[in-house]
Amino acid sequence: MKKDTLLLWIIAFIIVLMYFNKYQMQKCSKYTIAKGIDISGGYKNNFSIKYSYLYDGQLFWGSNAIDTDYYNKYSQDRLINKKIFIQFACADPKKSNIIWDTYPSDTLVVPLRGWDSLPK
Image 1: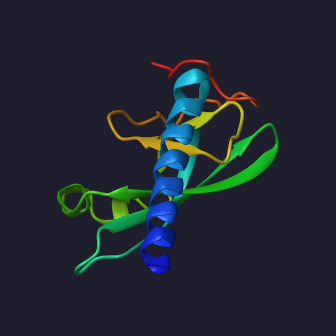
Image 2 (image 1 turned 45 degrees about the vertical axis):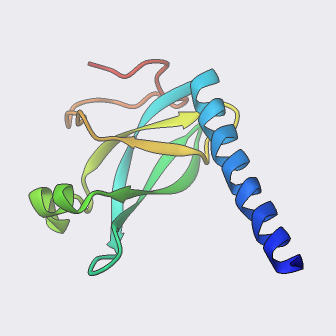
């Protein structure tokens, strides 16, 4: 019985944490460019891409899941060392998500504190 209760508390904590992170992103977020570092997973697990980005002169790391179909379409070679847009929380720049819909041009210069809206 105690194990079941503990498990329920852990699940509840994870759900609250997920919603809090989403709330922080919706409340205030900025955009910058990240670089794909590594891809892991596969077989029975989803793929995950690890990336790095600079904000206010500090280096941050993040990771996001990659849909298997997306991975098969773009392959590992086209995602590693490539520039990708990310959105991160103003309150905690460690919390970030990849924006898959659009990609930055090579000539785009990133401001030190990122953009308030996604550049076109």
